[in-house]
Image 1 (tube, rainbow, N blue to C red):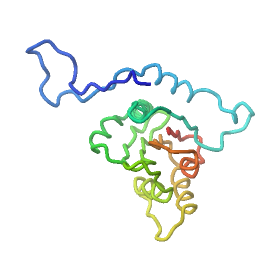
Image 2 (cartoon, rainbow, N blue to C red; image 1 turned 60 degrees about the vertical axis):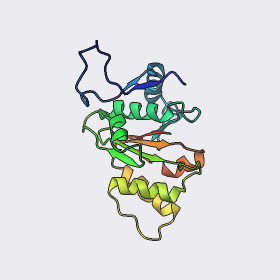
Image 3 (cartoon, one colour; image 1 turned 135 degrees about the vertical axis):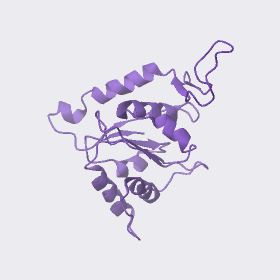
Image 4 (tube, rainbow, N blue to C red; image 1 turned 60 degrees about the horizontal axis):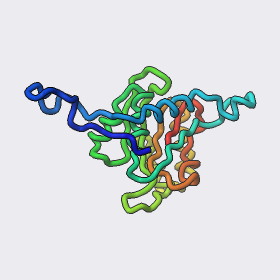
Length: 193
């Protein structure tokens, strides 16, 4: 998973025919095979569907790889493509800071956009669920009740996402225990971890 590159110089041009500065945003190159596989996974029937049940939760796609291998860039590119937004541009605009949200276009399978939070802090320590849930609630415009515990905050996140069709990017998950309390009980949402 190291064949991805982000071209920050804009489109290739002949000498003397350069674009004015700022004319072309950075672009995502490579990883077409991985993007295609992720899209196919979204369309593939899950275990609940095969058993004849409606999925009780959002579908979860896992992007695995070593730190620095481009997992976050791949997740942002997928989220942007699924929502018709520029999630990669949003990440640049947010100067790489997490959390962030990008409003959707109102069309497509995920019209409400993208939410992205980090599950590992810059020092490599897992972020407590309470903090992540609070960040998600803030992005959704839902007030965080003072003194709420992990279970209460997780339930508020699930309630807020129950009425949305959104891509939730949970970046740098250390383990399933970090992801599980944040999973929407809404099969119309997609989680990319």
